[in-house]
Length: 542
Image 1 (tube, helix red, strand yellow):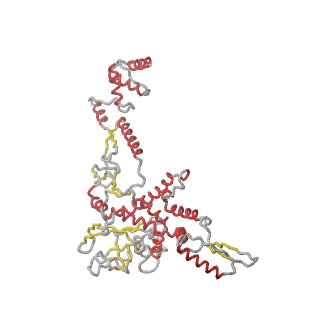
Image 2 (cartoon, rainbow, N blue to C red; image 1 turned 60 degrees about the vertical axis):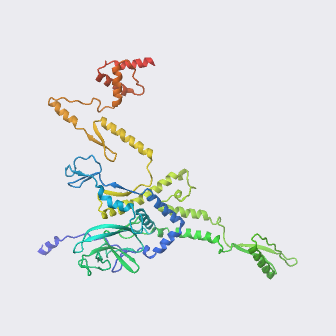
Image 3 (tube, rainbow, N blue to C red; image 1 turned 30 degrees about the horizontal axis):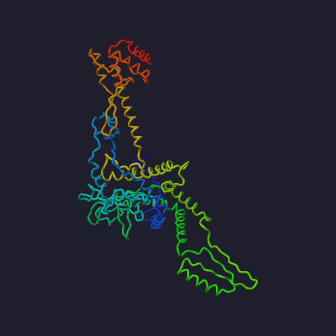
C-alpha cells in the first residue's frame, strides 16, 4: 500500500443524504406543494363550508380553551455536571457524586412570560390569537410558520453576539418557502447579511458588499409583492400536523375535496331552490284548440296575482263537439325526500368530522347520543384528537420558542382540554396522605416540598444509636415504629389501661385492638391479664 492510499484512508467520509424526488429545478430549490398554487382556492373552499369551519372552530376552542402554563424543566440540577433530576429529595449526584445543586431560576422566564401575557406584536395580537391562526393553517394547508422578529447586537465583523425577541407573527403558508439545495438540505443554498436582507449570494465565504459584514445561511424565504424576504436560522419555525416531512405537509383539504365541494353544491342547490332565480318545478300543459285565448287569460291572471297574491284564478277551456280536453303536469326535478338529501348530507358531515376527530356531539348533533354512541365516548374520542394536536405545540413549537428566548429551566405547555375531576384529585391526595403515614410508621422521615409533594428520607439516627450501644452508650427506640398500630389509638389504650376499671371499646378492631392492649399493658406496667379481663367483662355486659 502506497503513501497516497494510506493518506486516503485517513480522510473522513459520510453516508450519502437520501435524495428527495420532490426537489427539482435549478436555482432556488423547492418541493411541489399545492398550497402555493391552489392556496387561495383551498382557503376559499374552507371558508365556504359550514361543516369544515365548524370542525376547525371546535378544534381551536378545545385546544386552547384552558390556555398555557409555565412548568419546571427540573427540580434539581447538579452545578458540576448539569445532571437534571425530577424530584427534590436528591442529596448526591449520581453522575459525578457532587453535592451542589440548584433550582430553576424564576428570573429566566420573566421577559418571555411578560411578553406572551400581553400583546406579542404591533397588531395588538395576543399569544393565543397567533396560535389559533397557526392551528387554522395546519387544518387547511398542513403548514404553519411562526416568525420571530428579533433585535440583534453585532460586533465589528457583523457576527451576532446577542439577540432579543421583540415580536411574534404568523407566516402565511401561501407565500412562505423553505430554501433548500439539490439534496433538500436547508441553509446551504443562499446567504444574506443581517442588516441588508435584500442582498444574497451563493458563496458562504463572501461578505456583504454594503457593510462588509459576515453572511448567514438563509433558511426560509417569504415571497410577497414581487420581493423576497430572507430569514436566517432561529427566526422562523415550521410545523406540520397531518403529514410532517422534511419539507412541506399535505393539505387535508385536498383529501376532503369531493366531500366539501359536494356539501357546498348541496347547500347552493337548496339556496337556489328557495330563491326567486330558481328553475321551475315543472310545466302545466293544457290541451286546447284556442291558444291565443289561453295566453291572454294567463297574462291577465299574472297581473292580478302581482296585485293580490291570494287571487284564485278560474279558467274554463272550450273543446270541440265530442272532443275531450286535458291538463297534464310534467315535473322537472325530484323532491328533497326522494333524493335522500338529509341522509347524504349527514354522511358527508360525519366523514369530514371523523377526519378531523370531531364527534357529532361537538357539531350540535345529539341524534346519535345514548347507547353505543353515548356522549362520553364521543367526548373521549375528541379529547384524544385535541391531545394529539397539543403535542405539535408542546413538542415542536414551544421548545423552539424557549430556545430563542434563552430559557432552559422552564417549559411552556398547553393545559389539557379535559379538566380533572376535583373529587378524584381529593381522593388521590387522600391516598398520598395515607401512604405518607405508612412510610412514617416504617421508620422513614416524611417531609413536604414547596410543590406539596411528599418526600421520604431514610432515618439514620437509629444506626447512630446502635453504634453508640455497641460502645456502651444508651439509646431509645420507638416501640411502635414499624407496627400497624395507630399511635393516637395506642395512647388512648394506655390511658384506659392505667385507669384499670373502665371498659375498653373493642368493637370492629379485631386483632389490632388486642395487640394494642397488650402493647399498652406492657408499656404501662399493667397486669398481663387486664386486657383479657376487660374483654371478658365487655362480653358479660353484652
